[in-house]
Length: 138
Image (tube, rainbow, N blue to C red; front, top):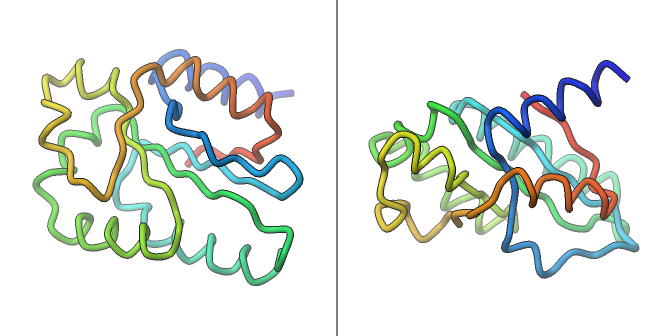
């Protein structure tokens, strides 16, 4: 119950989600990582690779959404940009919260093509949860 409250509060306060979630596989295990720290992308990628190996044919989608103040560093951090490219090649979908971009006055056009911007993160986060995504906040 405590985890649900924390996740819900973070969704509301930070505005996270994924409007681009058209390829969801409900019969498979899908994952969503919500993060306020772009430095977490590398361990998230390692985790996704291990889960894909463990889940085998049951592995579905893996989304990571970056939100909050950390979005300010996305376009300036070359290591993150390189990892985001690798994540896309690994079939991870990396999203950036549009509400966070707006709050910190970052033009969505400046976000690299290896990432997608979600417009309404709160709504999208709830929709993914309702669709059965296993969610963790780091």
